[in-house]
Image (tube, rainbow, N blue to C red; front, side):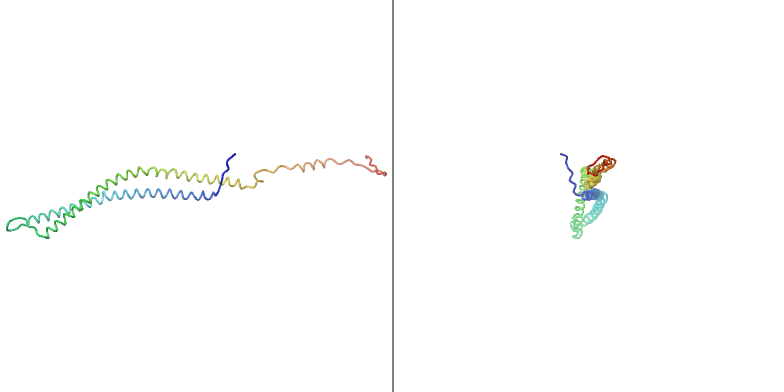
Length: 200
């Protein structure tokens, strides 16, 4: 027994097409935005953050050397031993702590730039299949939805057409029989005075 198609709503099928198109567009946009942000962050670490930290480190090293030289020149006049002023020693300790923090930030920026570069390569490899699917397969799916919608429209029109329009009515032979009968007249008979019919 042949299978019968169950056609519900062709409009529901057609309304699904914009959803597929939106999904493809949003997915491509999300993939592109994520990759762009990652590359922008990597560029900021390499070309802005690391150079800025290196400049700060050089400046603090120069300040630390200046304060160290100043402290070394301060000696006790009685025994000739170094005797730095309290303010100079506080400034020296402050600059040394700042330099330590900057060096830690430099190491972190270098580390994260390297890790982010590796993550970008892995990201491109992992999402390449998804990107290909969105660009290729979903495009084919949209075309298939159009074809299915057209086919179902045609099928629905055939099913809803009047039966008289699908099967031609049989020809009637009544008219031909009447015409044939009209061509043969009945025999003429005469009735005599005695009520008997005699052929004429």
